[in-house]
Length: 283
Ligand SMILES: [Zn+2]
Ligand SMILES: [Zn+2]
Ligand SMILES: [Zn+2]
Image (cartoon, rainbow, N blue to C red; front, side):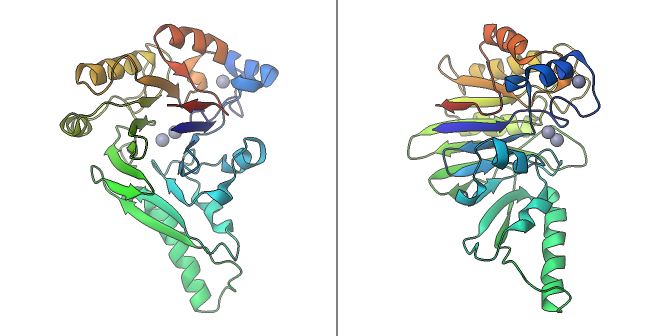
């Protein structure tokens, strides 16, 4: 199972547009791994996780070719994870649907835009120049669905009160590998923990949110390194992770106050891989 990180930044990315903090200044100077665009990843050449504002940048500079993907899992509707407007540039001839999997709460805007466009075509207010073969699939927490050779389960995230946010449990049935994609969540809510314990089974890989400065969690909806340690320990205590489970941190904000090299050293000692834009892992 191959995981490619195209974007590993928090909501504002690094360097944040208006920020002159030490980390943002270092990113402007060093570039490379200190630049963090908004969150997006691929599982093998099959699934894309999130379609953020920086999808355009990832196709320009990050080696992402959206034309070869047919399935996109959306975690939630914040713009650093889902810029639905960019979907509607699909050209005529894109006759194989692009399937978008999203919770009902996070699908409202994209459904509205899609319906408004269809109505404009139907009433002649707009001439159809594209086929917009975009299918929206509403996913529900704790309801597993099959997709290519994967079993995918959306789980409830602890994130923003007014946004229906999911994290994803993904199992590659061909290879028998399982991963937990847990970004834009704080410590897991109880029903998600209960589900994971009841479902059981060891995870080969976890990718954890690490937006915040260590020891300074200014919100319940994200994590710092201490919360990552707590979450990984909890997974181990319940037999969901072991010494061979790889754990990465991503969705890294300038709030964290670490350059990539500093964070890699600090997190590495704790057993975490620090993701960077362009990183590929084999699990
Ligand atoms: Zn985010
Ligand atoms: Zn900054
Ligand atoms: Zn968010």
